[in-house]
Length: 391
Ligand SMILES: *Cc1c(COP(=O)(O)O)cnc(C)c1O
Image (cartoon, rainbow, N blue to C red):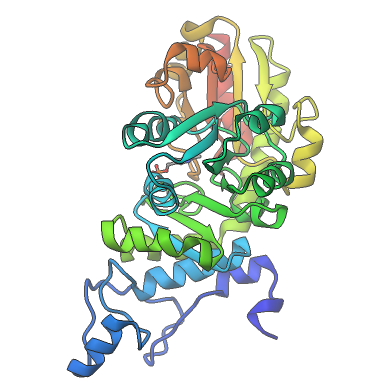
């Protein structure tokens, strides 16, 4: 039996492991910035690329390599570039693959900071950016230009959990000579493998579910080696590389990924069904609910709904803040993917730098609350919210 035959749960525990002659069972943490050569000729061969091997941890590090290989195995990717954060994964992707004057089409419903990066910072450096509605394929098609290099999506989206048809967008990208980039942060490869549906590149914020316990920042870009060579080149030169310590945390995090994602999904579905029954709740957004507009698509594309549930409260921002402030169990924080359930008011936190018009266009209302459902007993989460809803 080889790695190629292993099932995903086995890959999550075993893929990418490299062991030293010391015989450790748990993968080692190589906390070193540089590596020693046997002699000057070997140093020259390493730098010249004639001999493979480590040189300096901005380029490669064995612990980071193990993490990259394990995540690549899980996504079904040939190549993985680990980065210092999810945002630097997105930045490295654009800096590696685009030049001034190139055009990117991005979904309007992407992570607020990603909107800032594309629409503000990268625009100043000559990147042309068009934002379109995630689920409206005709808007994507109409936005294509001769200089379009990337189509960028998150599915399910943050915070409204809209789902797009990855295969349909991949077909559009192919016929337009562009690459489809999918931020797979919400699902992780345990629930969705975008490359299988035709995407060219997968992005991760490892900070979220890959860590799973809210400890470290990290990110990754995955895809074919030939495509990602310039992304790695940017990273190695500009330096937003993943630290060995963080890679070690993520590597161990991947070992429980499948178990955790199943449990997050189970809790989230139970909570979403319960929220739909509450009179103070106007609408619940969760891809695992039959009332979700893309429920059938989500069922085809994802193994389960994932851990993020959002809902509109009657009573706008006042009601949302009142509910958030009344919780005792849930953590008031914008992070997600933690064992601890977190509660957020997107309009005044994650999406506060987005203009009110853009927020309205993305459907993020003042009464919207997002919960990243953790691994507590869901009855305790319900009880915590119940008290707040009554207040
Ligand atoms: C958090 C997040 C990012 C950014 O990741 P960082 O690790 O915080 O830099 C990108 N995309 C999505 C969907 C996220 O949730």
